[in-house]
Amino acid sequence: MSDSFLIELERLDGYRFRAEFGDGIPALVTDEGPPLGQNGGPNPTRMLATAPANCLSASFLFCLSRSRVEVGKLRTTARATLVRNEQKRLRVGRIAVELHPELPGVEPTKVQKCLEQFEDFCSVTASVRAGLPVGVRVVSDGVVLYERAS
Image 1 (tube, helix red, strand yellow):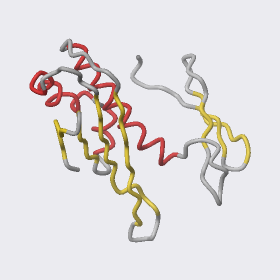
Image 2: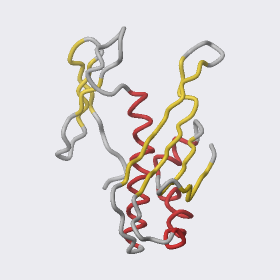
Image 3: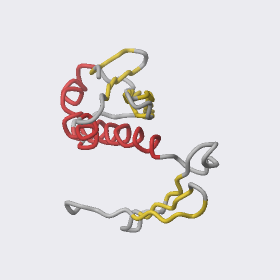
């Protein structure tokens, strides 16, 4: 991967855009919700919340695979909280990411190394944190294995 990349947006109609990522990656249609758009795709706020959730998920899975820990399904949620700033402009005030890995028969202590390291390898979360809080939790079978408050 190079040190930079280019994403091109082309307006389709209204507030719908086609985002072209290059490198053979399929295009993505984005849109705003009503009353501006028609919810024809994710809006920029949803994509912002998706980025750290996806990055953290991939980082955690990579670490677990390197540690030879078998993972079943992994479900991740990202909750973006919208707030108004002093000028009454809507902003993302916080993103809370929660990973739910299935770790059948795995002792929680076996994943401890990954729990201590996986966030450090997620470039997106570290970058987003420079501008807004990002909380992270890992929960398996109802047990909180890791938590970093935002």
